[in-house]
Length: 389
Image (cartoon, rainbow, N blue to C red; front, side, top):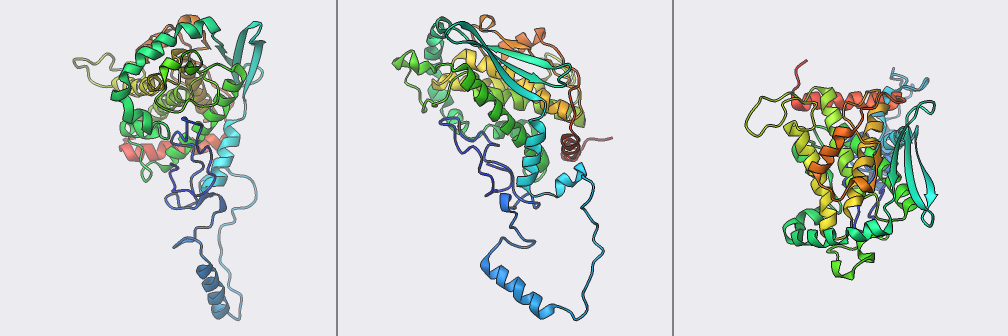
């Protein structure tokens, strides 16, 4: 669901078993974040649009119009573009502006051919003169076949994960809101930024899926009998894994910058007290949630472990791109490539281990619009968490 009860830009209503993912219902509503009607901006100060209200306003004007024209000294918001105007827009145009800005300096390209082998998708981000690239290699048919038994084994957990799998067909964000305390009233702009980042994920992940054209598990064995409808689009990377790891990475970066994430005291079972470390309890919980969401898709029977590993690599890089657009240097390491030879299986612990060989990228090409919106999000998180200056 959108944060604004939005009837506007309905967005990605469903990707065949991959529907909605919390932010995909579209841009949030109008300037009144909690009740705007979205794209057409037809909410009034007191109620929503209606024919009766139209007639009433027209009639009242006729009766009240003074003999001498009235004038108000309202601040003129026209003139030179100002990124700070972003918060004065209705949800749909604001979301459209964010979408445009986040799509700058990021692209997907492909090399090789499925028949000839060595097929790869390359995500390129940042300054064209010094770009950052992330390569996703397509597994071979033999490699896919070798993982079918892992999908079969994972099916044993279907009864245990049934509710999670069903809810995650349309909603991932609620699983993070319970960790990072996201709330439509307390953190509305943070949720809007997350929705924009999710829409960016969808655009990129589907382009990669189409270009790599990887088969679903059901193609190899009817014995798997997925518990949800197998989507019609290609398998790798997993969209759920891409979005889940984008969410965990973006939230960590945002809470670090806002000062809401602190070092924790040493205690039994605490693997790291450093708020920047992947094993800090809060960070570990976010990444464990991402891993659980990704693995749930294998349990459901619609994804290989490879798909989740590739999605994790892609999702973290997309989050870093969003962060650099806000003028922030990312603090979390990511991997520069997905190579199926490095992944026999996938889970949160294995992904965390792989990050030890990751890199921490420098600044990208910032956007004044994204930076302004990021600062608004940072402020509301500080207020929500009562961060002291």
